[in-house]
Amino acid sequence: MRQLILISMIAATVFSTAVFASKFDKNSYSSSLEFAQVTHVVATQNTGGSWCFDTSVRHNDQGWEHYADGWEILDSAGNQLGYRRLGHPHDNEQPVTRSQCNIKIPSGVSKLTIRAKCNIHGFGGKPVIVDLTIGKGERYLVRKVN
Image (cartoon, rainbow, N blue to C red; front, side):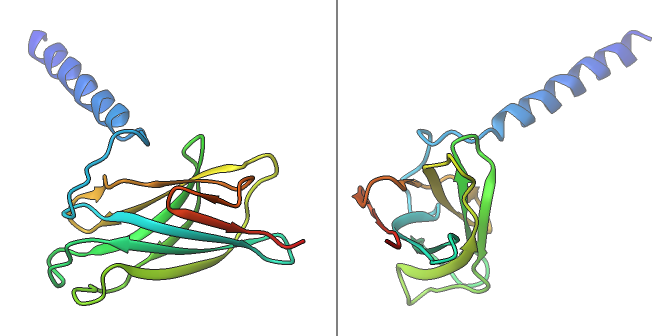
């Protein structure tokens, strides 16, 4: 019985640690190119109100074994608003820029985090924080329809 209780306690600790470890922290990142780094973002609002994001990602791609395989757009609460899959390595095209359109930004949301991932380390590189109320910021540009 004691063993069962001990195993249950260990399992609960491991599970809760994994859940808390996966929480997004925009201030905790690696600048190593072993992690996918977002280098620049252009956010463009379309006439219908949706957005396009042209996102540049830099990573030390090493063929299919290790490459940047996507980027995402998060609101300030960590909810995913959009995702762009990168379907193959870009060993000789760095940084690589790809677009994702028809992104709906909920009313009242003005700050977004764009972060990239690789197929080995997942997320962990430096993200870009975009403030949609400001036309230009550190590593980003915002274009709105008038």
